[in-house]
Each structure stands twice: as structure tokens, then as C-alpha cells.
Length: 325
Image (tube, rainbow, N blue to C red; front, side, top):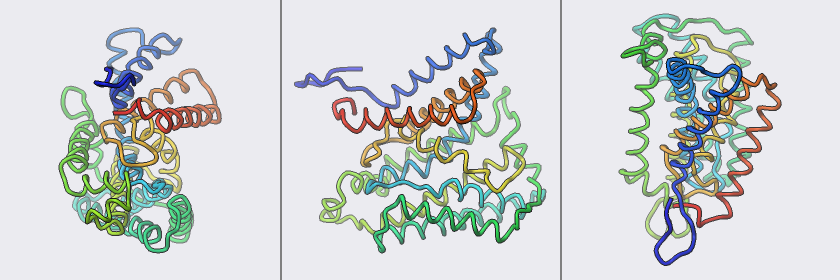
């Protein structure tokens, strides 16, 4: 926390604030009746929180991109894309290790296809992102019902379970190694590539970006296409972890994924944010879920808490520009 030169406004880094909040929540969980009581218990609890946070953060990756892109960007179809990718992975691989890569690329293409439809509708038909992606979620869910008729059969390949769900080194599960690598790649994409620079530019001001030579329409379509592919990737990872699929597997992650992006400091108006912040925000959201579960509160109360957290952060980040770096 520091004060800017020549300004009396107080500034801080949102990702750092999220990390500090996560530490406070974790320590607080130890004082609950069902909380950890020993050092080994704290370590086990930390691993469990990070495992669950990694899944949420991966799902929130595409959400981070579309929100940074501005234009009231949001992807309400992400949960449905996660679900359809998980179901196709589960049904097509059917326990065969040799089919992992072909199916992996297929589900990425499926996710990219639905994402591109979102982008085309938003860029060319001028449909608001909220309406377009919500409608796409309905299309995907209807497609799933037609294809599966409410019945799904299959099996996760043993290699997927071994790499993602099981402990690989020093008791650390493979999904955490994947999360670290994924986080590095997302950070490089946002901070070190032309795509990332243009993404932040159109998030700040699309008209100025267009006058500066940025092909805004193409960037919008590309962003939503990539968001769809990332949601499909998240579905592939999620089914590897759960070792089961369902017609609403990804729905429960939609709202938390948006909250994780906001908690991590990405402006919901676009133009500012980071995937590191989303990672920290996912840990915070998961810790809140863990606290509420430990307190044995019903799901309805948990949703109220999530909504309250998101609303408070929208107010803070939307009004106090001096609080942002």
C-alpha cells in the first residue's frame, strides 16, 4: 500500500488485496468448530482449498478476457460450454487413453465454435453480451438435451485421472501444477503479446483503439472465441477431476467465476485486470464457500453472500478510481 507522488489518493494492488484477504479467511477458518487444529491439518486444508480454487480459476480464465475487453463484456454461456465439453469428453473417450488428445482438440473446437457465435452476434448484430451469451447458454443446454436425451454414459481415461486428480510430487496434485503453468501462459498472453495489448486497449476505449489501427470487430470475435475454447478446456479438466459428468456440471461455477474475476480486481467496465488477480480471487471465493460449508449454511445463504461480495466490489472498483493501480 502506498501513496502516489503529487496525489493524496491511496492506491493498492487488487491482486495483493485479494491474497491478503485469502490469508485472513484461511486463518479465520481455523477458529471454527470444524476447522483445522494442527499444522498438518492446516496444510491438508490449504491443499484442498487450492485444488478447488484451481478448477474455478481455470473456468474463470475466459471470463477474465471478455470482461477486460469492455463493452459490458460478460460470458453467461461459460457454464454451459464447460458442461458440453465435459460431457463430450466423458462420452467419447470412454476410458480409452489413446483418445485423449483427439477428443481434447475436438472439445476445444466445440468451445471455440460457440464462442465465435457469441462474438459474431455481439460484433455484427450488436446484441448486448449479456443477452447474446445468455441466449447461447440456452441453445447449448437445449442441444445437450436433444443429443443425450437426459442420459449420459462414458468413462474418464485412467491417464487423465492420474495426471489431473492424483498426487504427483510431495503430495501435490497434478491439477495444481497444471494451474501454475496455465497461469503463466495466461499472464504472458495478457502482458507480452499483441493480442493482450489490443485487448486492454479496446477495453479502455474502442473508438480510440479503432482510430489507432486496432481491428476492434476482429478482436471482439477473437476474444469470445478464445473464451469459449478456454471454457471447453476447463470442462475437460473438470471432468478429469470429478471422473463423472452431468447435464448441469458447469452451471454451479458460472456465478463464482464472475465473482472471482471481480474480487481479483478486474474492472467490470473493462480495460484493467490480470489473471493473477483472478487466481487470487478464486482462492477468496473458494475460502468463502469453505467457511459457509463449515458453518453448515444452506446453498441459498451462500448465493446471497456471493451476490453481496460481488455487489460491494463493483461499488468499490466502479467508483473509487484512486483505489486502483
